[in-house]
Image (cartoon, rainbow, N blue to C red):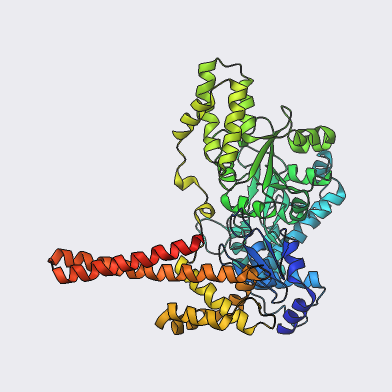
Length: 572
């Protein structure tokens, strides 16, 4: 396996790979962009082509091409290996199919189920006619691997059993259920349904959604696979594997409710569409979409519950700093209908989508409410969305826009906005920081030591600085901590040098940066000494020890004077 890994690494340039996921700009010898693993406005994600690695100064995400694909696509190592092997054109010769991990084995079971359902659809005229009458082309059926589950109790179970699949594995992927009150009697989960395979972002089947073909009063219209080790409905978006590249290219995603809506939009070329599959949008869904593009259009039919003013998904999207627009279909029509009947009208609806705040404001205005009632409705249904915006500039823009449309004074809107409650619990975790930052003192220590090592080892040393003199100054500040710091930071020397090169490589005045770092380091150490001295002074005052009080008072004054001197040097 290691030879395959080496082959893949030699054929895939890390910059090209990551550039296919996010936008990167040249930064000296490296490249930088906005980190795909946490929410940020200022780029702090660096990629080193020389080292074949990446590092984020904001959340400390790091790794190589394999870890990037694993993290971004939500795959295990074997999954990322397969994705990159396909990209590199490398055959995994050492891969032994008999030695599969549990995940690989379960994926194989699902693949066999897809084949079974596809074969049954080809032989079922009623199911095929239903799809054709909905406007689905044979090429689309093949592309999305749509199938049919026969209206029989154990047809899939017996088929898989005959191919050596165990009852345990069928249960683990949700293809069968155990008959209540028994230990060895099973039946198929999906029966009499059009079957839509659900893939993860790399295209591997993880579950199914089945639409009932002949409706009855007992069964739900759509039935999804249960939660499994492969299928997590709070993370999986239907069609993301097919849409992700187009979302990046077009720089926005379109979200629809169901499989048919998505399939029909893809069929007419609107292929940056994903579907929530009847489940509420979660933070995980939105974070995945935001990695591809910060802009999203929700496209639902006119009477959809998706346009509820209490839609937490919309608040989550705004909290994540996403630009959220709504596109409404004509009354009685859903996106799939328009994709079949009038593609141009569908495109117009998407083209004229409105920002969610404008949408609700205009909707309230269309009701012809008297001024007092309109103000109350704006406060209740629109201001909460403004409260979730992360940008003060954006808030100001929408407050001004609402004031112009409704003739409500801006001051009144701002005042009401202060009283709109946005619960901290409602904000996405990523906004509050899922990765802990490095403390200021440690960050400065790391950079000072890193610059010294970098300049001492670099063949292209900066001629404007005397690194030996700087090292002496740093040693004096570090005192006895230098050995401890070297042991701490040199465990990841390559990463440390990558950080330093990314930050300081190509800077026109490195000497000035080093001076500020040394001053900052000295100030931090003095602050620590001042804190200790002040505690000692407080203890002396409590015991009324005059000599000790004078001693520590003098020390506090002296340290404070040194700190002020450093602050004055900052300003020079």
